[in-house]
Length: 443
Image (cartoon, rainbow, N blue to C red; front, side, top):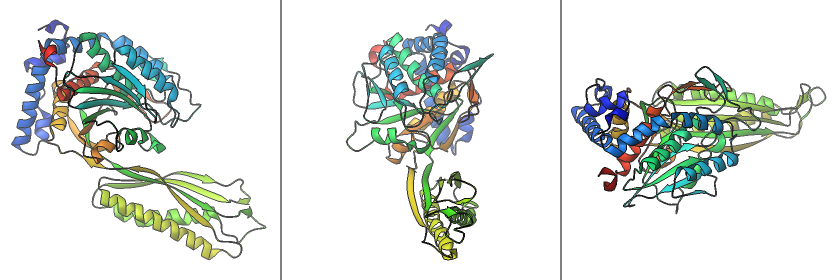
């Protein structure tokens, strides 16, 4: 075993001498869960001791300068919502150059790289999302200050894409093969009003079967998302004829209707979030009007509602629709002249919820990979690309991109490559443990 090429954290994991005090086991609800975690760690240490895995871990560390340089290059390729094409083309080229058997961009814009397994009975996918939250025209130039990289989207999720790509590079450069077929995927439409359109396409009826999904999104290396946070998003548009603020005074005002509707909604939604499953609501955008002395002909808002529980989300969703109608009716009743206002409610987002149990082998292995690499493992809920497979009953987890970062979804987003290779090694270890190390690679 060529332990001289393995990082100190990996050496300690393999020999079992420097593990943490198994915080994942401490989180377990019973001794059975602790035993499952311990068994998973033992299996993963055996896997990590295979010469080809030792070499792959070494290559990941060796690739760090290239990985960082490419992170900067890819960050500077704009990928605003619904306009990820340029980044998709670059990423597809890189995946092909990395050694994928074939690469294609599907009808929705997803980049899919195929790596065939020795057996091919199942398909395991490792993915990150191509899009950022930043609109077209945003300056995405990377600025380096010391060891810190500053740029919109540098972490979320450009770094996640680099984790996926570097796993493939390491596998190709070491000849590491799996039993199951693999897919390395850059997904469109994860952010905002993209509404997980890329994942909905990948898991549509009649699509190629993906048996397990592993997403790279979020910070650190210890966290595992195994529960998908459901959400519903609406655009509410109040419309009327508009007019002069003095000359047409007394006509129904769309902005006033919107204000009434917000007040009613927030007042009645608040008690629903005080108890029971965690639930949230947010009026995120407001718009309309042409000048201070004009009655607007249109007033618009966008609302986001989320809940850990589908039934609670449905109650919030129905309350929103009802209170919007009552706000409209109240303003129409208050008018002195002119026509009634109209309301259009557009559902602009619908992210389903779902989960796999804490004792599912994929979840246990994900925790174990974090523990072995020296991180405190934790489990949680979030809204990520994994929502779609989880809602369909397909095993899925979301793991972190590593390093240290902050100010996500803001122009000041930053990322530091502090032991960033550990996240890539974790992704590789989890992927191979799920897909099975081919026998030829173990000889």
